[in-house]
Length: 405
Image 1: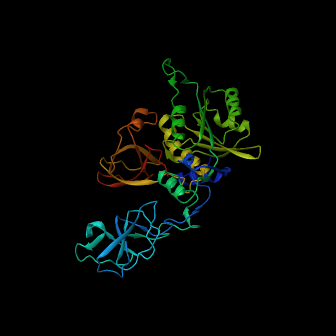
Image 2: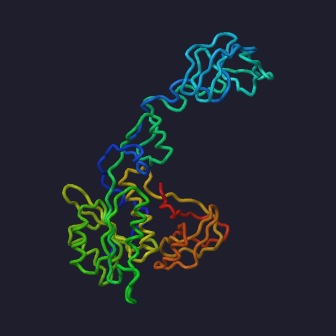
Image 3: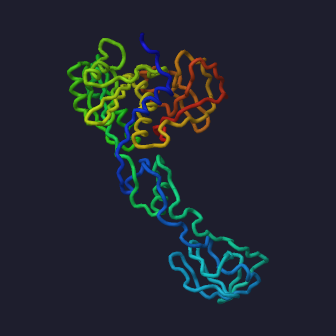
């Protein structure tokens, strides 16, 4: 008896559980942009490493509140004052400069009047201890965890790693992805496409999606609906960590990806998921040379291929890279158009989101590339859900940037 299609979350969990742990390598922190930390990062220094002024002004002791004061030196960023502060003395200080010994407050320059080396308060501004000072270790101390394992390294995380004393960071080896589109109907040359064929666009689309994350991508295909041709291209992809196929995973007479994978020695983990578009999704594994390859068989219709790549291929890649959060994040958005009641399958509707409101596209055919290109979001319309009216809030996913976690 044929097993029923898997629910989305169960299928995603099963796929991610198959992801092997790629080896850890240390790379230059500036070359790690977009990758994920394989281990927690701990500070190698304290920041600030001393008490610093947070403003331009004058450093003095808060117990010496009345003034006047005599300016006896200057502390600038990168050029600390070598002495201390005594009664009736003040040190000219710049933002980011080290506090001189004996000083525990900073008066802003606009709160003072200066004549020569003498300064007096312009008003009755008090000088409490700690005023305008960034304390030693206020941001982090040596040995403290500053970034957790699985954190994606963006510009701010890169800056934090460098500030904490790390020139290199631990990350997972980049996964190698082989992308194969198959089907006799696919024409390699989009400028010379006969009427009985369509231009092969899925391979380019999936490669572009994969490049949203750090990886190496190899395109193989288009490949004919032929067991020998499929066996040959699978052999050429034998070095890849992940093989992504597009087309040929359904149940038609010419859908040969599944038997070709089984003949190649792959084990089918599951096939078919309860979503629309994208039901005929296939996941298989192949053990070779002590390592596991994962095969992700996507439907051939362009929208189905894109939606399943978003929901499965990109999360798998994040898991291989060591992301703490591999699945895309949902947003809440307000409908500007009504939705019909949900059908028997959970549906992902192409939609346009303007930052607050969202509208489902009128056409939802799974071969409609133009509608896909006009969309930047997917509305998550659950099976059996009630009709929705304009103004209702719905869950959605942003697809414009790959839903990066």
